[in-house]
Length: 108
Image 1 (cartoon, rainbow, N blue to C red):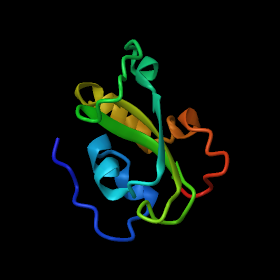
Image 2 (image 1 turned 90 degrees about the vertical axis):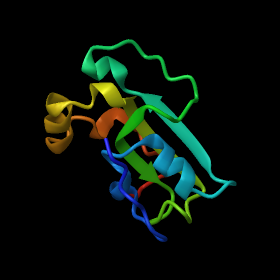
Image 3 (image 1 turned 180 degrees about the vertical axis):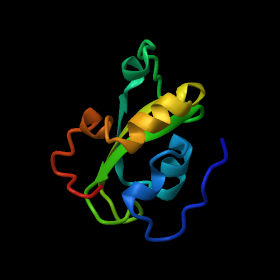
Image 4 (image 1 turned 45 degrees about the horizontal axis):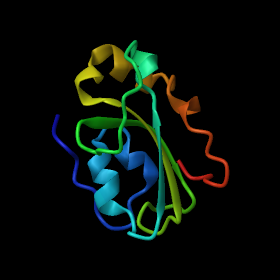
């Protein structure tokens, strides 16, 4: 999968379908990043261990309208290898939107 380049003042939705490392690179060093492992939604065990490489964002919300200005960001991820057509279809249909609770993070 090719990562999309995310420029300054990037809205949270721009990261959906891209690698988790793109969020990590764009966010402020002072921001909080909460990561939900949504692997069970693609019939895999939850195995996220904090390593950002190899994970694709399927849902996101933040405390500000841009990732760079957000104090708190929450993402749901699945292994990049599982981001096949069926997972892409589910993403397009909004099936992952409830994988993040977004409390205090109203921007998607």
